[in-house]
Image (cartoon, one colour):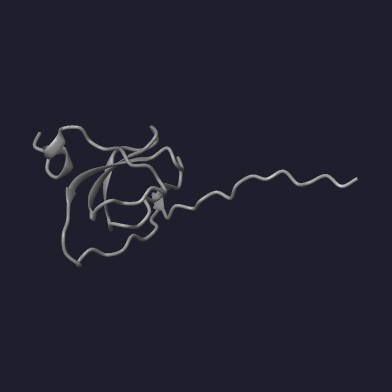
Length: 97
């Protein structure tokens, strides 16, 4: 199997998680937590990695090949992936006496 982009240069893929910043525009391999087979998604650099509608933040991304140019369409939520929604921090309400 011939790999391009990040894999070819280091032979160790970097793993990205939902909510992290996409380091470079490109085609990413998307691996889910056992409910779906691997697929690919094109993502734009400096945006947030999306989350899965089914497994949430258990999805992982691997850069397959970088893409240069301005012809990449912005990410849109699909039946599988959706924009990352940061969870609000949990706070304990103060007790009133």
